[in-house]
Image 1: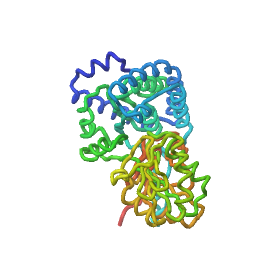
Image 2 (image 1 turned 45 degrees about the vertical axis):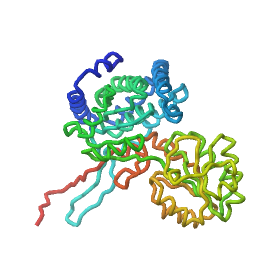
Image 3 (image 1 turned 180 degrees about the vertical axis):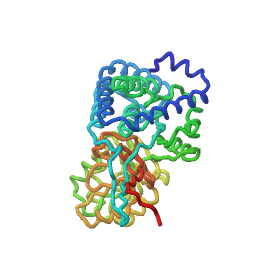
Image 4 (image 1 turned 135 degrees about the vertical axis):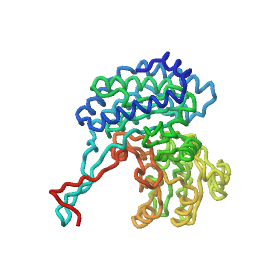
Length: 431
């Protein structure tokens, strides 16, 4: 296990050799995990949860160092919120580990099976992906979530967290390793990159000499863009959350107020936070003022088009950039549209295929929204802050994949598996 002095010394090591060693150890651990019984993996997860709780004072102490550094460096309030840990959030991390232990083990489960006329029995069975690299920023809880989800799915994982929260990540990581050791699982099943040098990311993008099978980036646009541009292994991309809410002409006002305020203001710094509000012109004059007043009561800044500014004189003018900005702050852009079709067109033009919501009592309009908005998550009459693997019953998530291949939406244990075909015969030969 790494301690602080070892991390300091690691900064002086050759990054290429360090990452190559990490890759080899991860591959060896992955072979063990691929055949580890469910009971042993669950024991490890439960032991991790206990270790996280026991390490709460150490984790909080490490987090205080990170927060002090972030504030001194002038980090945005949203990033500081993401990086902040307290006893409640640490308990949530421990609970997520226990929730993942309770999930069904996907490894070895049969997805489909059929019999051919020649008597061959064919089945498609879930298997681990192998070794997964996770590159993330400013979210210490991802250290535990990613490590636990990969373990449950039989994968080894290499974690590279942001330098802003390196002390918090390492404190959590030590608890995870203690859990692995307690369950008799290889401690190299979960490894963390112990250096801030960005060259380590470059080595991961190269694939660690063929030892890395998939990379999952979780962070800002520049990080994801770099990973997509440079990665030599498959990527489960998590792009920014340009989340929209459309208020239809048949929306219920009370629902609309509650949903919009919660979607925007519950936690402004998460990817499921609403960033743009679209309102049908047929109800804008009656439904928009009380919604904007409720947002402003929570100290949310309104940026609107010309019509919005007429209804809300304290709003500032929205620019073209506002429609494609992920604020991650108490700011929302608001636009009045001609109806459902224009709302769908706006989302298609400016959205990031992450999460979008319609508020309406018209089931036909809701179905049309679901069919035509091509986002990983679409909601009807519910807060966009439910865009979360834990809320979906997945225990936790590594991120929200916004691509269209394999994993899409919250990346949980099932999305961290592949499959193989198992063919059983009785002497058949092909003519």
